[in-house]
Image (cartoon, rainbow, N blue to C red; front, side, top):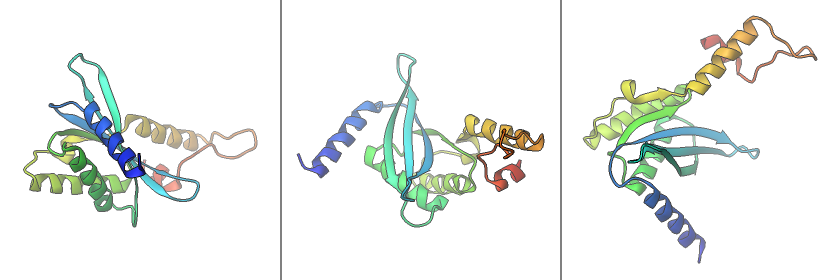
Length: 164
């Protein structure tokens, strides 16, 4: 097998994992490698006929160019078209980064052109774990919790804490 055939085989396997009918939700997040390459991971998830939560990674794509919402929406739409599920999206979960707001706006626009009824205000779901992490970080910072070496405990950018 050659690499393109291996990739096609993997895509076919993932396509078989997706439900043939019904709505599918997405979760997406970016990850930066130690070599400063940025990737967008896209997970499809749904409830099976036997009421089990199912999920499959459908995309792990390098983001080329800027990390704008429009650029990431193009990547997501390409992946959804590859699997033929762009008209079956129920929810979209992401963290609170500002480019995710513009991402959902771009998805909303693109999907409306396909006559897909989807509303970013109703169907964009902020990741609860990320929200809790931001709240705890802001709280810990406000009460000046410090480690034994005197440094403030925080994995957050100052801008995140100021937003809260």
